[in-house]
Length: 449
Image 1: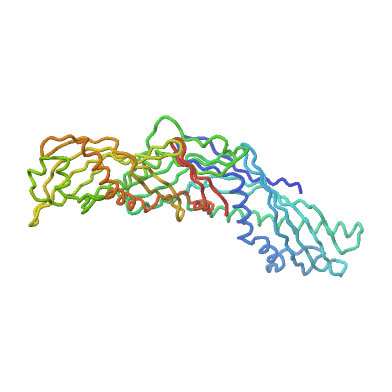
Image 2: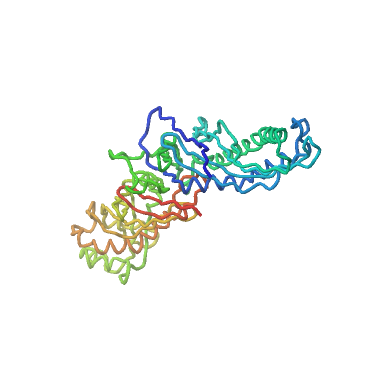
């Protein structure tokens, strides 16, 4: 059945454009699912039929027709097509039976199949900053009409007049109601979402959505803010994030490495800890073990003393991405202490400046992006200060790497377990997404249920 309903999503492209850190591409799979779900979940055609069958007091009667009832509403079939630079053409095909008493005095029954067409523009709510649909120019096109009335000119004129009066008032409000239902699924898009108790992320639109022959694209300039109110700026590296080639028809969410870096800055303080572990692998965590790498420690501490490490993050964590692999870079100070008895403060042995590379493994749980890290490499290690004399810090590389793997990375993963919020729109289930690490970005391939 050929149909031509236009659901237009046009972008207001005026104004200053900030570099987006997040891109959303909505393919036909997502749009079909969302419009069909809105129609089904709202039960709007059935509600409109019920209202038509129970007219309100003061409602305008249809000449020549009494006791009108609308029943047997067919399940709507919705067809969508993208219109480049305009939006989406949509056709809603359905049917129903209209009954009542005709002017001839007999029982009338009209079985009708029809298409509903309209132009529904996607605007941007100036106050909320969210997309908003608005319907224009709704029309009802008759596909077929069958009736139990005699086939003559007067009857045919009466049937045609009845349908022209009944159907637009019945079906066009249904389109408006469906759009209102869809609009509610955009309502929370720009609300700030918490990242633990450290701050919030707000997905603000860079510009109104744009439509191509294969998808709708929404660009975001996220606002990342500490709990105290300080904004964290997304770094600019001169290039804008892009979706992988050959995926124009797929629904995808792209999270740039610069955006993930800004989000992790919210958690920087939580990554600063004091570590005290009795054993790393087979080695006890005490001055006796350390003396095997720094002889001066044995001269200072004849009996083994427990060790304590203080980790201080000197720069915000940074995320880098190459195809298939993502790293979290931590620039930190590791200060080693020897414990002392009788409530005395631990004694500082030395402080090392380190550059730690942790490989990030991504997943989605409860519609939040989850990260789990593992030790990739200790990229640099430099002695900043020492109370146990000179030593070659390179000889500590294996010991420090093992310690970080066993004692510190579990702390990092516990901090990351809070998860990072994803855009809340159209009830998209991100848990179904397929994740792919590309150059400078993480791409979530979105699926419908």
